[in-house]
Image 1 (cartoon, rainbow, N blue to C red):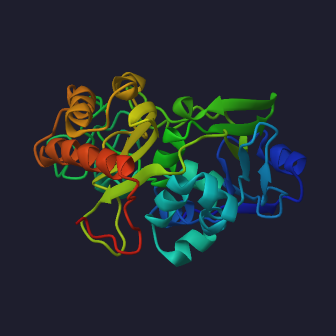
Image 2: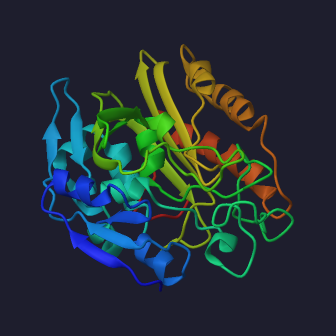
Length: 338
């Protein structure tokens, strides 16, 4: 591990001051991903700013009937909050599908948004990786790429985003509150994570020195017809090969609103508004769901080892929408797909 200095901030202003003038610093809270990357010498911050004492640990009501999740709320706190379980069960389910109870007790909302890819080549400093070292190449292209992207990839990078929580947040149309040297701003969730293009080392649209303070959930009506379906290599603890967050609002047996986001298939949670619009006004049935799957996957491209993910994603979309329509969400206790 590369030597680093350490500061514990007692206020947001103190954290921002500590981050100013040092481009190689990192904020740290739960540290469930950052510390791993530092141990592997993938991340090499020269200064860590501990933000665990900041007043960002509460879940609060918003004026429009939504919820604001403080950036330091833990994954467990969010998943077990009665308001989240009642009004945003899709989010609670997605969080419960990820990691282990021990990790969920430590991992924070803000940190979850900043998880980096689990690509083998990203973690192995002996091989080429444009995300870790820009311009060095991509070992996954033409290499072992079973877990890699089928949508939105570039010639520079085919890594996938690992978070389950973020897939649900994308479907729920969350917004992200940040504060930095230029003040406060709000980022739509769809604009927060980037596709790789020619700068795969830049994961998000956060600016230098900006700190995530909260994630806001708008008032929604997706508490009945929803599911988070996660397909993985082992049920106990694994990242998604393909996951689907689906939420429908159904009135008089007609779909009046639809949300759909995929994980494990792209460099960011994958959501297509045009595909969701195909469901509006439709009777929830296999034909309507199939049209959505065809639309989303029309541009999918495998890399050899991961060709199977295209058909896997197609079937996952069909099953997730069927689960949501029937109001029979996937159990995150019995994770078997029946």
